[in-house]
Image 1 (tube, helix red, strand yellow):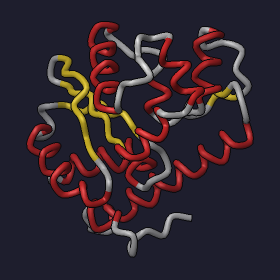
Image 2 (image 1 turned 60 degrees about the horizontal axis):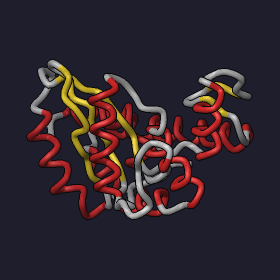
Image 3 (image 1 turned 60 degrees about the vertical axis):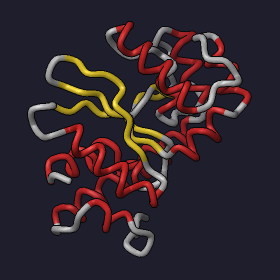
Image 4 (image 1 turned 90 degrees about the horizontal axis):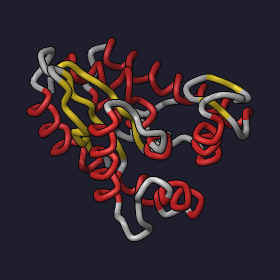
Length: 191
């Protein structure tokens, strides 16, 4: 995988790569690197670590990629509060993660932006996603990596954990380590 692609993943998807959340979304220039080839190589190599990348949409010379942990996403989508929230946006309880991601991809392309339920796929607490939708993005208790409407202490803990994941991976790449080696269980020392 190209170094620039690895750096982009470390910067924007570190919490997912390190196992702290189910998914991350990043936008990357198709001109900066061979995105398709890098995605194919990532999916082949990182499957053993329980990771995948899915192309969500292509907009001019940029692509939106969803980096995720399929097993964690399936568990998340099975939660009753998540199913209830997604039902309002046309996701049925019988949809598996792949079908849900197809629906999300279609909604991103049609909306020309981000449908509000995307927070569910990014691992944000369901209460915060629902709060954002109900309040139109206003009246939040805390604003950090997302707008918090529920437990602020838990959100602060997660913000810190995600920052440590990013710092760890970016530092490892800076030391000359490749992304795959940095993510091997014996290499992980995120604390």
